[in-house]
Length: 78
Image (tube, rainbow, N blue to C red; front, side):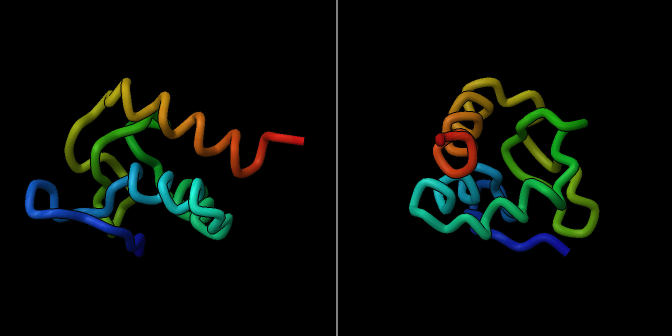
């Protein structure tokens, strides 16, 4: 089961919240992305906590850029 921050707008876990955790130096937040299927691998607004699949906001392009930046900052820089 996936867990993460949500809001009244979308009550399921937000990949952007996990990306923010990465930028805050919490590398363990990378586990969220290892477990989440998202929108067939594309960033989405929120994920179903049971399946890890997109719940809302499929093909969320602007979020994908932020997520890519967060992943690079957390794991890609040498």
